[in-house]
Amino acid sequence: MSYKGDTLLVRIFNAEGDALPRKIIFSGKIKKMQMVELNGAIKGDVRMQAAGGESTVVSLAMPRFGIRTLKLTGLQMPGYAAR
Image (cartoon, rainbow, N blue to C red; front, side):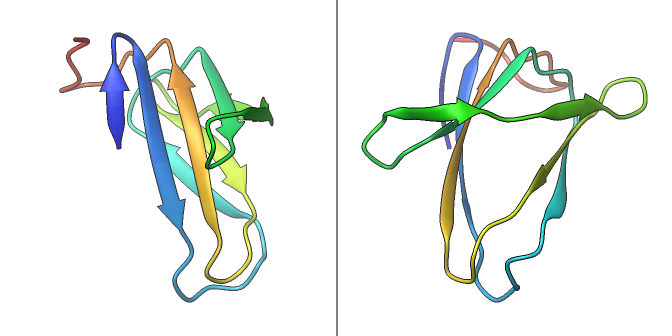
């Protein structure tokens, strides 16, 4: 995980699950989410939904032992201070 300003990069690893879509819930509001390749190239936008008052949900599928990097922009998360 690395962050700068209102942007946070999160790397997710599927250690033992199957390739079915799973929900990931972030505690906060996010304006934009993108999938990023390991070399830093933007692969595309990720669909997300507001869940309750201050949460954001994304459904993500990845193969076993797969790695995904998400770029979260416009963060409004409790405990997160933009730098």
